[in-house]
Length: 165
Image 1 (cartoon, one colour):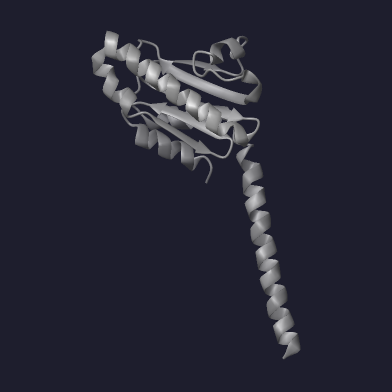
Image 2 (cartoon, rainbow, N blue to C red; image 1 turned 135 degrees about the vertical axis):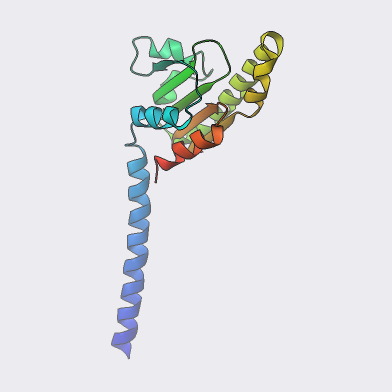
């Protein structure tokens, strides 16, 4: 009987240990998701997007360009892409990978401020675009933060989440 109980306890301990290991591994693989894969997947999710201008952390002026998206220290950014409507409509899709996921709250706040500024601009210059900015989504997965402003933001958000599955 003691051997049976020992085997059951050992099995339970191994299952619990492997579950913890699997969780840690999945967190590590999240940081390996490429920004270009996220960009491609998310932009393809909404086929109604207009022509988009793309900037990213790969660009020569990446730090300067990032200031048009969020007012945070660029030192916390590991990589990003930012796509916005070339014709000046409200559509924007961005993903920022942080060096430390503990900075997520301040970046998400900065993105909400960005949305408020865009909404204010559209209220004055193009009121038809205001509704899209009001439906904006800021979401997070680990150290990845996404900003989604488009007519099919639910589909784009689902595409973002699917990259981590």
